View 1 (tube, helix red, strand yellow):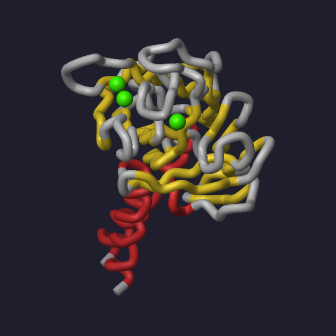
View 2: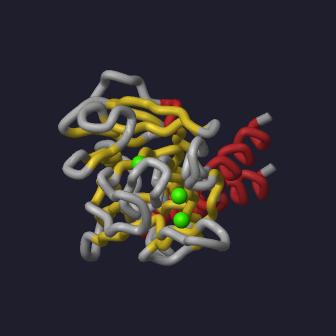
Length: 234
Ligand SMILES: [Ca+2]
Ligand SMILES: [Ca+2]
Ligand SMILES: [Ca+2]
């Protein structure tokens, strides 16, 4: 029984190092009317309005109350930050919705800005622009690494939903991520509607810092040594 317990401890510790699991946060997890909420191990805040969800084309995202209901407008900020004592993280995917390109709602080529703060290294700013295509497949341009996939087309009444896989490449020490909208350039139509969008999903993975890994590895070594000594005594 003790041997089983010991091997369980080893497995658990090792798992903590190599298998910190991917955490998925969906727009549906937010509570309308709040402006601060812990979801999926991250502290989420909205300013200057409150969380407000919106569903279109079968996709639900969270936006901010105010100018455009259920969408993040220019000068509105949705931010996720690690909790006190929490681990920095790697982003597996980002999914943004309601990012159109005109002319269906009179939109500009809507532009989302994503800012990441790292544990070490500079704060980095990225953009996702839904570019207007007069023909051919619907497309959006991400300024960072990774791949962009259209999940719902940017035509009425679909969701204009875009997933970016591995949006920050190898960066794995993110402590905060923030979303806002930027004024976009005109693609087609009247362009009397400014950028706004919502957050449909964030998938991230906590990453132990090298010092933490070192401590866990030391712990693993000590456990293994104790196990070997006990085994040789038996
Ligand atoms: Ca369009
Ligand atoms: Ca497009
Ligand atoms: Ca929009």
